[in-house]
Figure 1: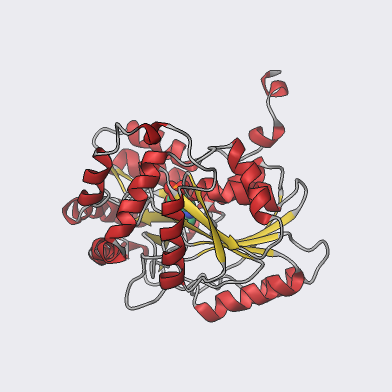
Figure 2: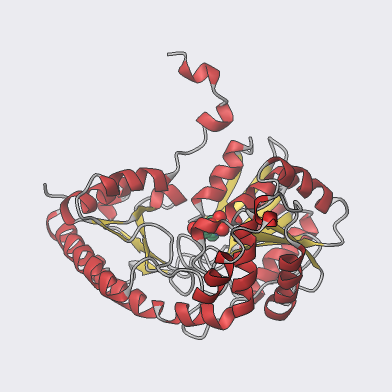
Length: 394
Ligand SMILES: Cc1ncc(COP(=O)(O)O)c(C=O)c1O
């Protein structure tokens, strides 16, 4: 009693981070294998790492840099945005990862009490960023039952009601589903936001993670902000570099973003920004080369999920995730199933309820090399066969 009186309701009433809970489960099981964390198994390009070693001792590495990012990196990113993403009118701010980019945007664009829109299943950290900044009116829209793509008809209805949501956010391709948003649908969502006067924030963390010939695309507009990350593409999770591409013509936006940036990281770590620059110089072909092998992992895990029956697995056209429906009787027990799979079968996945999708689990196919993935898949398959046949036997 009394403990919470000293803490902010904003924090206390924010969901607990699912990854922290999952890591606890993982640590509690001897020799468990993880299909849980959204990571890739590769390191940054060797040549880029070599170059970074040479600047460890340089005085500038230990100083603060400009809030918005190193000029050389921002220039390289501006070129990348034009050439690869067809974004010609965007300014760049480098952040300590895409998650921090999202928090910057929420603090810059939304007031406590505003309403915002996300689509289920949603990225849990974005949801938490809203909660902890006092934006508790989070309208969660449905996805198409077959494709999981955001339901634009629902959005049209919601945006025609008062109060008009301040911001709509989508992840393309998605976390936790791996569903991608085709350009015509992205355009429709954007047009709806524009006429309603809402911001559209698109998280492109997995821009290079597309399979089966599908193409990721970005769109531009003075109400659209795109977020990117070096974490997965260049295996730079722990280096913490992401960036925001925001409309240069949106009056005052850059100034307000700078206030937030100056109070959180000041600047993204200088050595990490250098590594990002050296990695960019190596280029997207290097990334595509790493990503192309993930289709094998995806196939192996799709096969392991087959005990759940036809039509149970959705998504996976992009990103590093499959989204799988548990048998109906576990609709409210996905966390229990995750604990059981870990304890009895030594394999860890993410419960869907953390992303607004109770009764589902998220499986990541990015974090393990093929042979380890085979091993994890065997455990997963055995666990799911038992679950379907006998239930959560102890
Ligand atoms: C959709 C999405 N956005 C952002 C992030 C976080 O990226 P970063 O490491 O750049 O903060 C992740 C990581 O899993 C993600 O899946």
